[in-house]
Image (cartoon, rainbow, N blue to C red; front, side, top):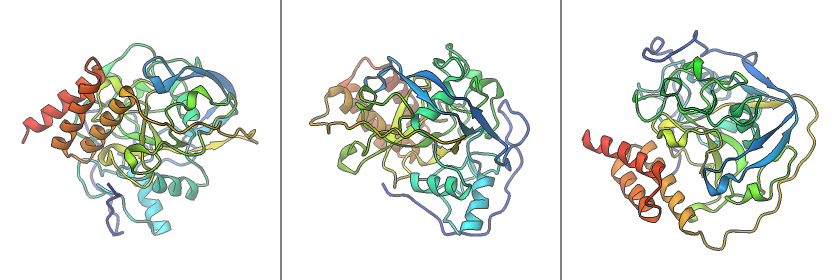
Length: 333
């Protein structure tokens, strides 16, 4: 599925602040001052949740990361200044208010915006450290116990929340919406075995990504989405997508980062190409495809994919949760 885009048109400020979400004051026009400084430190990256999340110690130099996801207002300013095409869903009233996060962007769109701002996409390690907080081990951005009042997930509202929504759900570093709302692009390529070979200092991911479904190498996504289930919201959960695609479109955004000083080089460790995916990886692939179809609102296709995932891993709660969400959408038709 290739990126759907609209031609650039005059960009109007549409609507007022969205109701129904715990929120601070509007931040749609936030500037670089709305970045959070993360000091140099060590944390435990990964978790026991999935085979591709092998826990390991990582040390990161100091950096800054956006406090909020990039908003439609901010992205609209970029579109005007850089004559950049509008992303998918730009005209969709569910997700196009100025204070909502921009969605429907591919990896190259996200990279271009960050570079226009003099910034860059965060590495996967930087993203996870910012989500886990100063103690470096939070299962959710706010702590270890799930709280549905602190996150936009599971199609509870049927749309994205403003970028400054859920102030009670911020990470220990004060970063907003690192669980739910939108999936977020990061800089790294995705390989399922990378954590077993990752360097301890400033990891930047492997040299190339897994050739997922024979459609090309994939980049990492983080954070879950407004339409994804609770079981996808923990701080170590890894998703993936081809960089040229905006699959997951209606729930796919990003935030930017920057280094706080000279950064010690740390090349990605070499990894062996996967010869053949085992049943677990095949199930994860089918699950990811179900999320992609959900993001494109192709719920019948999503059901086929999630049924395949469950057939390969029938005890997986996350897959079953997604199936229930898909059933609800099919029932609306």
